[in-house]
Length: 435
Image (cartoon, rainbow, N blue to C red; front, side):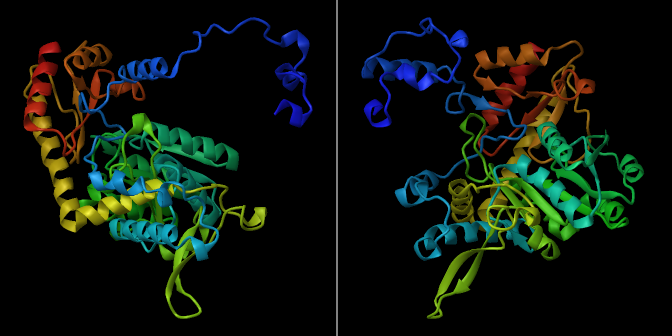
């Protein structure tokens, strides 16, 4: 290879780096290992991870330990799916295009919206793109976002807003949900959109029907970030007046993978269809009248003039979107509703068990789905408690004092359909003992 490119040694490849700043020693690494030794070493390191095969997880905060039907991994491991990339040539990409079309159709069914795109990087990206869309559609420069939205999502929205010279106004919460009085005061004639999450970061269900007239009264847009699993039970945001519905599809058949990747979804009312980021797969017919699929309405700069583009998002999570489609087709309407109901019932059972522990309290009385906040006894360190619970075989709840200083000593607990009554009882008992 060196001969082919005209180099004498490996050092020649680095000659553009000034001599004075080159590293001349030997990097402090272990010696080379043979194949067997390397595999054993990697297995040992991987074994240090606290995974949900060996630990009962009560940790949510955006990534959840849901049941994944075995058929999903079987299907996405087929080479025609996991090697597929961008389906630019429809004549040889019908399978991939149909899979994405099915994903879009499912998302429309779940959210109650007219049109969905071919998927986004994740739910956080989708929310920031929704803010950008709202500003472009309304020609306004202000976004109002609730503090009950995931803290990382709010950070990403602010990052996006800086690039577009938008103002982001945060609104506080009361009893675990958006403070409607503060929201009314924050919304003005320059507000492009109100951004809320429901169920929100605390697990509480927002009153979308009450928020809708506040923003629509000034002709702005309502953006709702939703947990898709909850939509097996809750009224779709589209039926409650949302203009844009986004979220992360990870609860629908996508593994946690130590935090990612996941798959975002993005759905809009029909008037906003041509402003959606990414692209849409459309259904059509070929010259012989046979059903077929094509990419359509591609509003990103790779396909149209840069100054006309609505977004520069450059890909979609096709393989993970396929996981979602397989999950929903496997579960069906009744299966999704049953899974959602198990999440709801088990979370409420866990909340009751924790509330009975001495010194524990549920600070919010707002309705919640599969995640809730519990306040530990005065002076208890959530971090120290979590380390002790890890020794007992539990991945415990998220420390809310990190993003919300006023909630120091509060824990965010998630309970999915996978948690058994025995696991919940042992978790509540051990947490009570430690606190």
